Image (tube, rainbow, N blue to C red; front, side, top):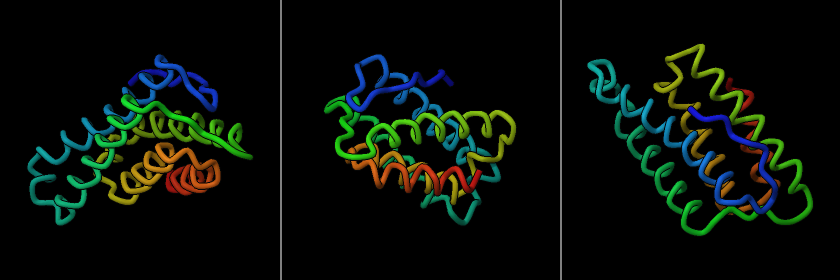
Length: 134
């Protein structure tokens, strides 16, 4: 996965592209698991698939509409995004099984949706929730 640069509350196209690439990298990892013999029989297969679709829809929203994080706490929200995505990538590199941990993928989808809404409070809350799972 790429290295997500530090983004500002109104990220430029390169910063959005980097975040999209990182997110799609996680989608690919989940898909690889779902296509494996273990993933095909996972009782949460449908839930994983739904979360993949949420992540893909968010990437489409970010790339089409941009990302704007407004209001008090925008800087802290950006720090939370950067910290959480970097920690997630490092954790994935160390623990390959993360792609089939439903709670982690759910938390990442929650973070992605909150980034799309641009609400700093939700971004920080969801970033912390994901960090606590890692």
